[in-house]
Each structure stands twice: as C-alpha cells, then as structure tokens.
Image: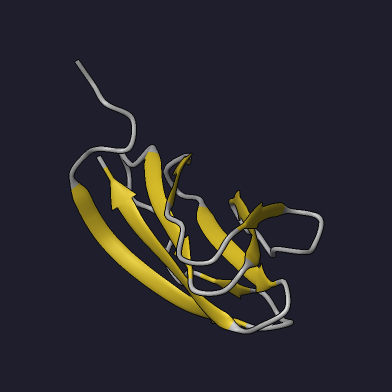
Length: 93
C-alpha cells in the first residue's frame, strides 16, 4: 500500500524569489516523479523544463508543504505574491 505524501526524501534545493521569479538551479533527477515544495511567503509556482513563474501560475500559501508530480529533468520556479521568500524543493521517491 502506498500513501500519498510519504516517501524517501532525496536531494533538496532552494532558490530565493522576489518580484522576479526564482528557479532551482538543477533539474530533478532521473527516477524522480514527486517533489515536496514549500515557500516561505505566499507565492505562485510553476513546474516545467524551463519554468519562469508568473502571477498566472498556481498559488501556494506560505509554510504549507505541497506534493507535486514532476517529470525527471524538470525544475520548479516561484514568484512572490506580496513579499520575497525562499522556494524549497525536495525530491521524493
């Protein structure tokens, strides 16, 4: 039986964001299909091969971890709603 939101924590990356999007430096690894994402201030997030988050993307509340499905080789980007913060992305297997 597999439980959503559980798994082995892998590589962690972070990136600062302001009114300019911040994107993790390295794409997620081969075999990674899930990531845990946390933002330290309300933000909009985007996942893709070369993402740049905008205010049209998915809203995330501050300090509320979310799990997202991702493809190997993709990255995560975030941009502030009203205050700068830090995007934290952890690979989950």
